[in-house]
Amino acid sequence: MKIITYGNPVLRKKAQKIKSIDKKIVDLVKKMFKTMDAGKVPGVGLAAPQVGVSIALFVYKVDDDKGVVINPVIVSKKGEEVKEEGCLSVPGVYGPVKRAEKIIVKGLNIKGKRFKLNLDGLKARVFQHETDHLNGIIFTDYIEKIEEFTVEEGYKLPEQLVERFKEK
Image (cartoon, rainbow, N blue to C red; front, side):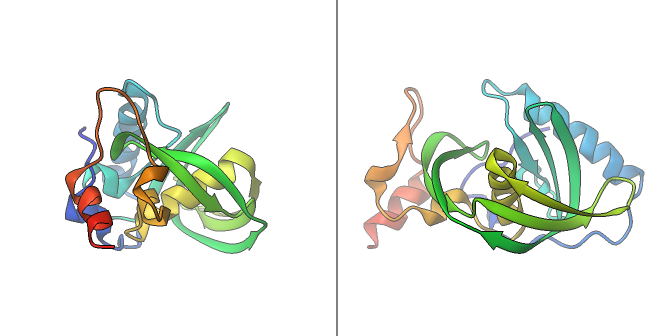
């Protein structure tokens, strides 16, 4: 399964809510976990639009906890924290992003059961980042100056991203 990179229009679309969880969804989730782990730098989260499927679903793996979140809604945000983020769809590029320190999120698990979680730390950040993907938002959208990006050796900023800063 290939990860879609910055510039592909699917990353800017609002993902469709999932009405029923069938075998296709379960198979997609399995492939997404494999894809997330397969890279040079394993990810902590992967949203369905990042693999070209515009549906409201993401998988995550933070420390010893992993799971699937379907139709997530962040119902509460508290505090602010700026930390460096990266994204499998913008490989080798990192930048500081201000996010809520604590969130409450509702959604469905892979069995269709509703849940509500109080999150903080890295898990809260991952859930916000992945939920953004489902709304057509990429972490780079939060960065105001091109100088704020850190680019690993062997990588470069995507051309469309460079163009965005030329317009300012």
